[in-house]
Length: 500
Ligand code: NAD
Image (cartoon, rainbow, N blue to C red; front, side, top):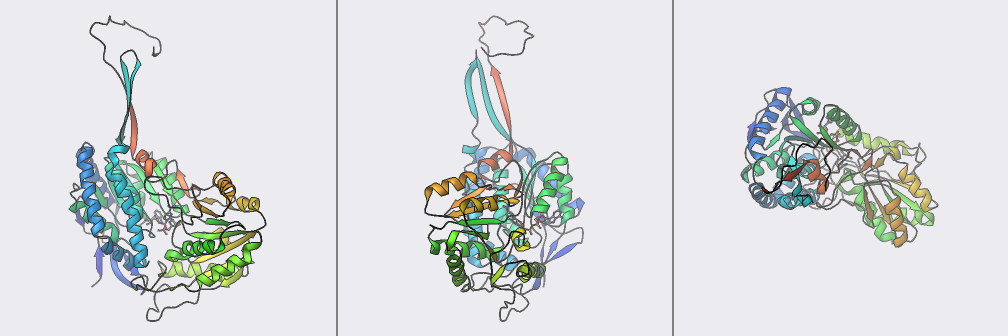
């Protein structure tokens, strides 16, 4: 029997009334295991209406009431880590340990939301003028929406909704239609934790559902994470409709290796960051820039390590890397490797012929390593989102930083060196939102913010951390005077108010 994943509206499962469904495939077998409901405009409207109704009381609820629910949710999430990771592996394909890692990083944001009372503490200035006090507070927006990608079906929604609801908003999530089950399990756990009906809703689907969220007059803000073309579209459309928007896009993350670096550590880091999760991470390293004479040695060290990676089903504890999300994506990734030599690159490892015995219909691709890739090659210019690492060579640090800063993307980047001065210079000069010094995947902890520059983020706010709290609230400043009964009346004063 094919499993069916329905929407979650007003605290319960809502069957797909539109009658439209999409297929969900197990990437390790190529088998369609699940049908996911695709929401119509009316179904999105029902979810937004449920969220609007719930906001009437949730937006007024006490911080203590909200955080006690979030603490219970945190405990449930912790207890169900394995189960959520299994749902992710079955639909995304990543190996179980990697799926557990994504749940752990999502949980960090729930931790942050449990302490929202500290973040939402206002400011008070007393006696700014005679008997006048000024306070600044932050209040929720109302109904907010999140639209999320396939590659982190639990973590990326948790970058958004814990903080959004902790701030007093209600939420409508449109997760990726490719791996929808984890989001519904999170909704069930929120309900078990005592979250009132309608505070968190999930609608599945495609552009129809997304476009309705972008246009709906009751949706006050939109958080998006996904590819750059769609992020740009979401930002433009939702902004034109008067909404607050943060839209995180794709990436091409560079790792700069200086000649003084520990080359074994750099090779370990490059292999882990390029090929982990089959390269389907927005923070994956996809370009290594080798400076000076170390290039040949570094490429050889990367090759030795990359060749040993074991690719197989995510459910097999000996697998280190799983399949790609769809057959079409697998073929697209393979096309970059197939075209690389003609574009001037040296193909050191070609993983395009890789198969896994007993799983011949899975979306498999092996590890590819391309050296001396010209910046004009498509394999360098595009976000491939697969296990393909490009190595580029430069003579100097200056050439390397110019190359990195010429990229239209600016998500994460890293430098490997033993020279503190060079690392400091790189931190200040590189045009990217997240920088690692001898750290290849510098995903910030929950209490700092996550976000890129240039085509990797559209909007003013990074996601989570203080930026998250600011995004999901709006400021209000209250100026108060309590005159002393003994004061003489001030009389009419038509001048602009001044403080004395
Ligand atoms: P995607 O852009 O195809 O889809 C993201 C979401 O948008 C999904 O919910 C999808 O249903 C919806 N969508 C897709 N096409 C749409 C359209 N034409 N109109 C309206 N909505 C549409 O991204 P993906 O393939 O699911 O995820 C991979 C991408 O996400 C990569 O580019 C990766 O770099 C990026 N990503 C970025 C970050 C980040 O923090 N910057 C994090 C994770 C993933």
